[in-house]
Length: 314
Image 1 (cartoon, helix red, strand yellow):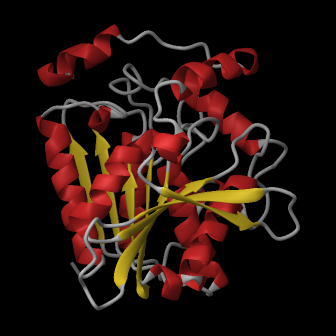
Image 2 (cartoon, one colour):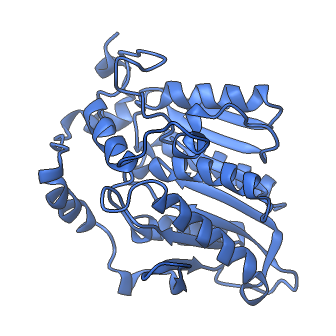
């Protein structure tokens, strides 16, 4: 199997990407290089809010995006959005225009979480930050003009993995009802890229996101956690034994993405657990394909908007 020949011609530029050396000594440089491509916070389209963290010295930053016109008398649906970055980099500004445009298209309020990053803040800190963001959105729904019965969770890549874990955490704590989850090529399984992976797929991991990068980021996120207690499913949703009583889920992934097998497995587990699930595997594209123009990108965006609209009653 030759991934190069399977690559959609519209996305041929993935062949020319230069891979980074994912080590602790190089992480600061990787962050600096990638974060320099994001829009500065002062120019972002979201409105910043800071939320005090219980028993923590820092405040959680949330970026709130609203439709440009809000003539509706009823409260709006909402989305808690979690950015990607392998748990080790990123911020809401990396998806600023995408999230702002999505808020307008759906007529929804979107709250993006600036969660703490590993390895400085390993599991469960990023997940707990996401829960605090969801908690704030639900608690302050009246001030935000949000319908608390129509809140979905969405994320890309590592953000998709955190979104999946957050949906499980919300179910287990029983404090907040979630209308649906939208997971875009979610990062779910720390075994992927190792000899212990449930599936060895030679057609994946060549473009955009490598096995080496994946293992480095999971190790950063794991920290000293031994994955040997009841929190294992929250660390890695792929390890969950109980996926029952979760809201409708949408999963999208490219066929050349390193995560395609873990994402398909998770979708199958959701379905067997009685959860309505919609799975899209797009041929010929790797991880992060939707950051670039192309026919598959447009199809994915259309599918995401339609799925979110259905979950949110749009």
